[in-house]
Image (tube, rainbow, N blue to C red; front, side, top):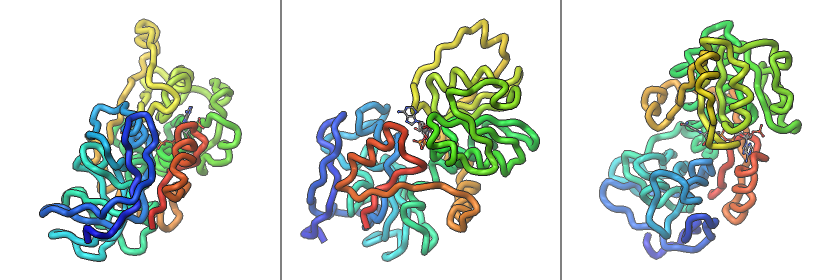
Length: 317
Ligand SMILES: NC(=O)c1ccc[n+]([C@@H]2O[C@H](COP(=O)([O-])OP(=O)(O)OC[C@H]3O[C@@H](n4cnc5c(N)ncnc54)[C@H](OP(=O)(O)O)[C@@H]3O)[C@@H](O)[C@H]2O)c1
């Protein structure tokens, strides 16, 4: 096996892009599973790691990729030929990840995926679906009839949050940053441009805000939450910082609540996995842009600039 070669994206310096290289298929140790990767997620977390801008970073050179999906080639624990997802246990953070034709993952980072699942969907759904579920149910506690404002509503987390909140019986208003994305806010969410945000545009105060973009969009949207409402913070693509005038915030009386999927992953896992069936049947939608590894730069650019609609995945099949 070790004489076979594997097309691999290798990061040599933080702040640069990984380059495509032919490397030997990695050696599997006891307790590890060798996977022929078919699809790998390109997510904001992966880019933060590539940039060297995350709290947990690998030694260099490294293979990025915190999540992938493929077929088991060799394992003590998992059946050969089974379709699996690889994620967690430091994959793509402390150890080589999924941006390669072959990946070795600790057995505990390998989980079965229903046969017939689109590998790109299998490696893309958990983070946005889990974040959406955690934001709507675990953190915001959305109740039927409540009015919910969702920012980044055509993004991966935002689009699923719109759908999960609507399923919870909420009236949902989705905010997008550019006109081209208005049509990508999933039904039944109402779509509003961030530059047009006002009490009139959203039909009066909302009970809860679920923000996936941060920065100035968060600042503007916060003012639309009713007193004793909730503002749930998920992401920060538009900016990592929020300046708060404490006196104004106390007066506004809005709870600022964080969503951390790493700490809530286990508690939302069952509900999130149940969403996979609905994503496969089309009852829930999550657009995925697919790129071959030689087009990584384009994929990264689309994700970084916010031009991508939904998730971005590498096709390694
Ligand atoms: N807290 C957690 O545990 C957790 C879990 C998963 C994800 N996240 C975070 O949640 C955020 C959203 O993730 P996602 O997968 O939904 O990302 P996404 O699909 O890229 O969507 C985020 C939205 O942010 C806006 N955006 C993107 N880049 C931008 C830029 N450079 N400037 C301004 N706006 C930009 C875009 O909306 P418009 O074009 O409409 O402006 C985009 O649709 C990310 O920050 C991610 O790291 C957090």
